[in-house]
Length: 200
Length: 96
Length: 88
Image (cartoon, rainbow over all chains, first blue to last red; front, top):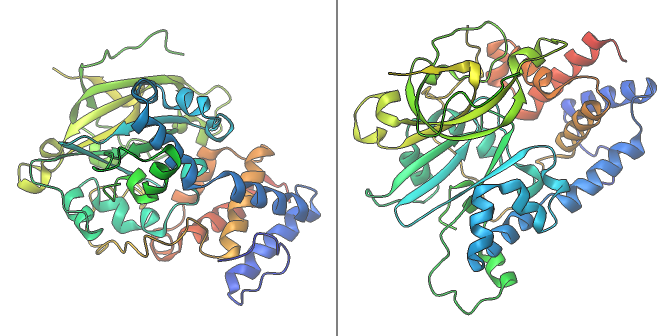
């Protein structure tokens, strides 16, 4: 939607954009940062942080049972095997897997903690007061608002990210995908599936 | 610094009934409720201390504790889920 | 003395708006991305810790906290911390 390169040309009329710019100028004047540093950080962030990363991890877990076991035992170490060490150096990654009878969903009731490096920027709904307040109380109803209607027999585990541990959900591998390669499998995995608000 | 893991996997713990006026990561909806330890993670500095600028914050094991929905919200069909939260050791006590 | 941010289990916030699931993962506006970047840089510079940042967000007066957009809360917290730390 917006280019990361227009660092000092905020093409936005909203007052808050001007307020952000004033803060930046204050920090730049104090020698705490530069326009180039801000621009560079965003350029690298956009390149490195994306749901494509999480999807690669999921696809590997679907096709390699031993990797899956390692992933569930130590998410950070397993992610590093696929080259995501730098992405997961700021936090501990814990990975939880959906099964035929248990579904996992992630929330952060206190703020909006999220594994940005593996999923990109969080969606607005994840940060909303509605999602933060209701998911621990009535997850089935919240998931239904996403169009995910789980059978009554399916247990739901809600993970509240209250610490520096960040969560990724491994969805159930869809039926009829035996012939697909890793790239094709990764393309099936959605950001919402890795948070737990979609089946995959 | 904690020397070991105080609460073993599978043990029953209670989120303490505390009500700090400073930053904490023990949500109100869990305080006083009992759950089961399902994981223990490497020790982390206690946010309550770091936020207040303590020079030597307590560093404690962080436990994933599973609470049944009925324990938190009462026994109605909408509460048939579980909630797992990551809680620092000083937020917890043994439960009988 | 729980603060307004501690919303787990509270009611009244309405339905969740799932938005467009097909929309790519991105910041909603350029200014949000800049708030994110500034926070990362100041953390890296050691101006404040992540816990201090969260504390500052949680300390926003309740009516303003509830009415503000997510990254507006970040912006307000950054302004408070920069002032408090006297770095700029």
